[in-house]
Length: 389
Ligand SMILES: [Cu+2]
Image (cartoon, rainbow, N blue to C red; front, side):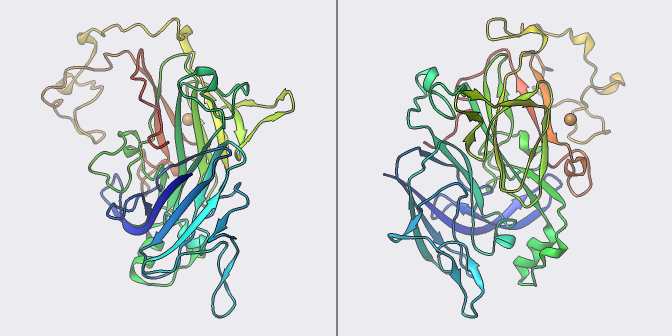
């Protein structure tokens, strides 16, 4: 039986404009930092899994619920709603009391797919505060060593993939987070997000690698990478309380599943192509992105041609491609040792929320719910694999 241990903690998020935001999140280690989103949980269809939760928060109980999972038990009994002393609803499922309380959930996923897990306790508060993560259920016949069995939904479902990426949407209202930190009243009616996140990060941090040391509480990057012709599985998860129209440039994506259910009715393929998918709060979508632009494919890869250096202006040239500065409009020399511009011949396509105010960081464009898809002539096979499971 698979076992996952999670600790609910508090911490501070980093945003690209230099802000620091108090948040609550799950950690996979008793001594590790809270993280946004929580650790990916990778389970397998038909195999029992136990999720142990320790609540180190001092102020309120925490629980974990996952839409789409059935027959969940805690302590051997079916989970049920929890009420406070005045009869008010506190949690949708059994919770762990504050100050080190524990709860242990067990269930057996009956379907493969992409799911959200989140706190079921005061969810209008604890979910925006960051207590959410991804639950990936592999099909029972999943075998990454055999291409026909390296699928999202099982052999023969036309969901084989070469690489996979989880993209979890969220929003941050720093005012409400500060209210929680200071113990002020939490008024969801005042909800006004200033940051929009993919995997807990705002652009341009979304494009950094996993586990960069300067984002200790935001370990997951959101950059999608592949080579022409590869089947790139993108798992969208709407963890926040807003809806987000996500749009990849470069190629339409094929929606193969919704809310952890394959879009197939008997033998009829019900998948469909879209250039924008509205990821609703609490919803998940599985999309297949297969870039074949300019005639490049797996058999006909992008040629790696070095650009003529005379065609790349720098600094004083006056028509700078990139000035060497992280800020737009300020010129400087490129860093010592940097000698190349796109010399791999890769192509980049934006992937972003089409609700354009969401691609800002507190009003500054670009930022927020935006990342890039990089299509390369070749790429390490370990890129685009999920760490756990
Ligand atoms: Cu666009």
